[in-house]
Amino acid sequence: MTPTLVRRHLPSSSSPGSMTRARDWAEIQERMLVPLYEAVYERLEVGAGTRLLSLGCGSGLALLMAAGRGASVRGVDADERRLTLARERLVPEGAREDGARLGHGGPESVVDPGGPAFNLVTAFDPLYCAGGSARGMAGALARAADFAEHGAPVVLAGWGPQERCAASGALRVAARLADPMCAPARWRPSGRDDLEELAQRAGLRPDGSGRVACPYGYADMGSAVRGMLSTGAFDAAARATDEEQVTKELAEALHPYLRRDGTVWMPNVFRYLIARV
Image 1 (cartoon, helix red, strand yellow):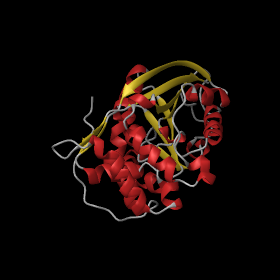
Image 2 (cartoon, rainbow, N blue to C red):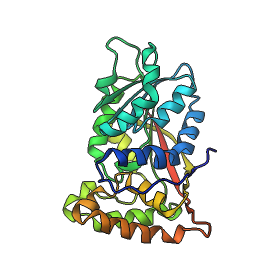
Image 3 (spheres, rainbow, N blue to C red):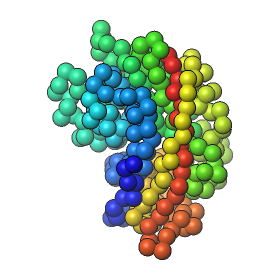
Image 4 (spheres, rainbow, N blue to C red):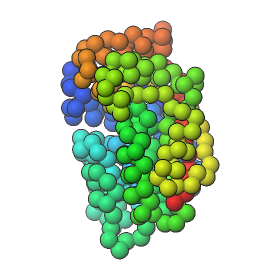
């Protein structure tokens, strides 16, 4: 399993929407989900024959891993800053006919007219439960399914049970501080059947699931705070109060996971669902 303890990073005073926050995601936080990516790719035997579409591809680490297995990859994301970083990782491959292609918005932006259909769709970002809209996610999945082969797997991911996710305590800070009138932007605990319900809303057929340990490991408290803030789950809280207050209360919530050597370690379990088009 790929290590998730990250090196120390210099402090940042950037706002939630800054390029620095996107880099915090790419350099600190995104790698925490590597065990999830690896487990799914291994189970589905991702390789040279795979034509992958990633919804919410972020800064492209999961795409890079799939491309390393020989897959042809496409990715879309709503965050142009993360896409900029993804292009830094993947654009050198874009010159090849089967190379990576990245787009802003929906799957339509990366589809080749008349090209082969996708045979794998992924939506790894668990923050549709934390800061997004289930209705919007279902719509994106349904549109992606239109460009996939019949029977192709669609992978959805989300948080595991609260009692097995140490990060849920920190995420409750986001929910408590956020404006109650901005419910879609607030974190909420994952329900047992959230992934299945999302798949069904998108017209997909559930066909298996799994759980993966994805511990959050940070070199120090500063990196832990920056990593958690980079997820976007705290943006509504920062708008409702201020970033200084959010940072203070987040650090307090993370303190129980501070180890004697100064590192921060939070065991978490993520769940993924395989559905079919």
